[in-house]
Image (cartoon, rainbow, N blue to C red; front, side):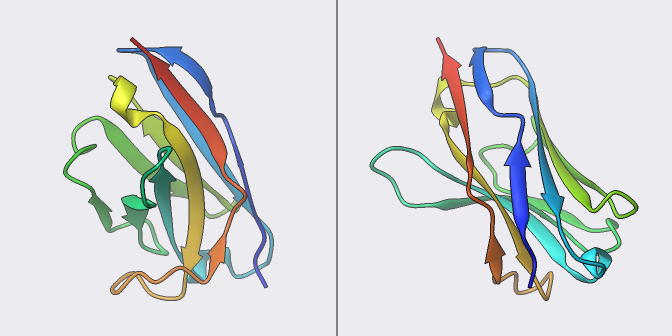
Length: 120
């Protein structure tokens, strides 16, 4: 069982930056691929980024490529999402997820979500 707790969301102006964190419980964090998803009001949850257990592989949605960076610190059982050049369309609840494989990435565990609001 893995428990995930996100933090770092908030209100930011367009063009600004935020860094989300996701702290995971358990002693096998490095064995999990980790990912970030988001869900805007009235829309389905969508993939944002994922990272392999070692941190050596990453993948991004086209909509965030070049602006967002996913990283992890296995010593701290934490995965991060650095979000730069934020746009109003990035407004959503952001969810952290853990999966047993990087490809395909099928989350087994989810966090409770953290709200990100980007004002224009």
